[in-house]
Image 1 (cartoon, rainbow, N blue to C red):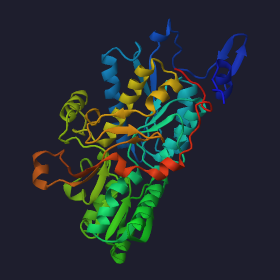
Image 2 (image 1 turned 90 degrees about the vertical axis):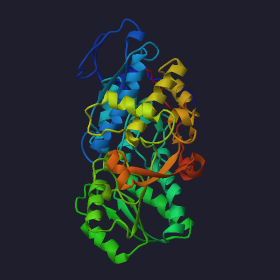
Image 3 (image 1 turned 45 degrees about the vertical axis):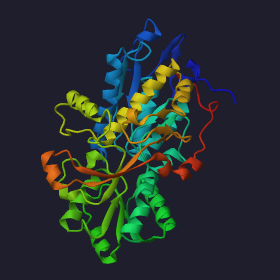
Length: 433
């Protein structure tokens, strides 16, 4: 099939724009109308599609800060292909319908070159459908449902976080062997929670455990008492919690208040740094997964933290976490791919991103990373728990104690890879900003 290039006429038609007469075209309520002397005068415009309100507002702020540090590093070197990098941001509100509208507006009104950002997997899926319609390369920085790189994969979308299956593969087998085989699932009632618990259930069964119950928690829950009392009655060996964002903070506070931090044992599939930063150390119980930690004893980590503190001296969060790291890394790799392609043409950039290999040193992780065929970066997964209190008192940022690092091959989501049936290059519209 031949490539479906978006011409000026077809773009106007697809975007629902209207001609006003001979040679006149109405493009909508633009903030700025610019005329550039040459392509190199035109900035590369990145549309940031992360949350500023709702369930993932704190993580959305970290996501954007990570992107901005990578962009600042490229702009200090003269930009990319001689072009300055500019950004715009519209709040996606942790809402898929809003995410879809934001992506549509950024592409059709503001003519962004690329899209980056997401926390909610439902929002990321909505954005990616719009991005694929126009052919805009979209970097899903921080949402982690297995479906994002599985049945909802797209040619234009690249996923940069570990997903629920990756983290479950790192934790489940060992927990069954060392803690017990009677498991209860505590699940946020939306796409990430559902698909993460589905992956956990499959692995528990495969390793000889048993799921004795599953409790679904609506997003926005602020009283976990009924769920926790039920857990006390059921008495599982392990609670596998797929609870995220502000819900995770509330859950942790109330588990600690009820004295349930040690019995049963808790496994939180993934623990985002912004969701626990500032909580009492007693609330950081159980074992949980992450993709990065600011105190890893690896080359480049200390310098990265120093750059963060220099750029954001007044932020409450005095150490960068995994969400910031993912936002930074995906932006850096996107702009590096543009440089290698020598163009912002979407197909050329996609081909540069596909199959990339990034050294452990460049990733500031323990193992080399690589882009999977399903467009998810395959990377080191860490299991962690709360730090020893004596160590934490010396450095209030030292919340985690890393228990182990797991190489990418051991935690690959083979189910997502098999489910991914992405569009061909020919089925993807050509787009260049």
